Image 1: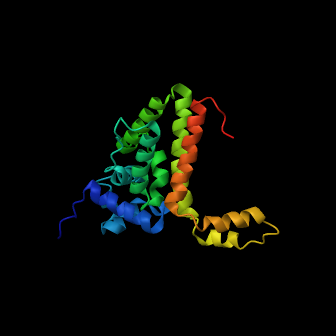
Image 2 (image 1 turned 90 degrees about the horizontal axis):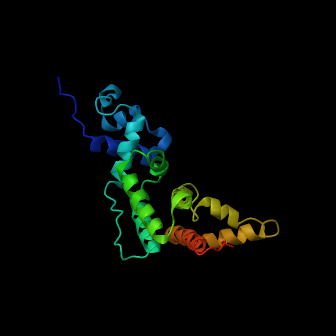
Image 3 (image 1 turned 30 degrees about the vertical axis):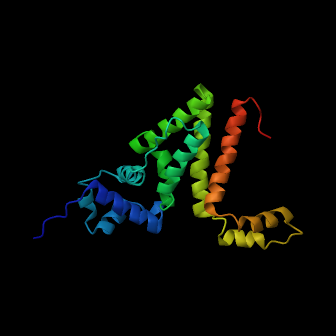
Length: 211
């Protein structure tokens, strides 16, 4: 009788990520990961106790190699941009994982490290207390939302093509904006939006209300 297959957490996380990349986050389960690995579902429970633990291993697999530390001589804006850029680079190939980073932010060592460095940059900028909470949440919301938007409704996708073909009599601004959107590449969209967010933070620090 063949010996049961021995699995590492890395093997399991890789299989879970393959399921998510192929079929999306809703498809992730102990059963689908076991099938991906070629083992029985009950065998998988020898290594992980439930789907929540599966998710945590996926988060660490995706973000584990990200170094969020940026040289102290960089400005706070450049520090935030560098951290976010590294995060995006790690995640962009696996967009179905985006919701997991917020869900496991309190448990994942990798998410904690990214958050700590973002807070360090915000603190250097002058944010403290409740304003720092709001600033961090705004950054995290922008990054996760932008990555989700690029995945679910890419500017170069069919949805934008449909909007661009709308009657200019009925939707002059929407149709014109959609036609422009077809010329915007994903990186320009993402980092252009980040610049707007950082401009807003800078204006807040200067005591001005963004228009």
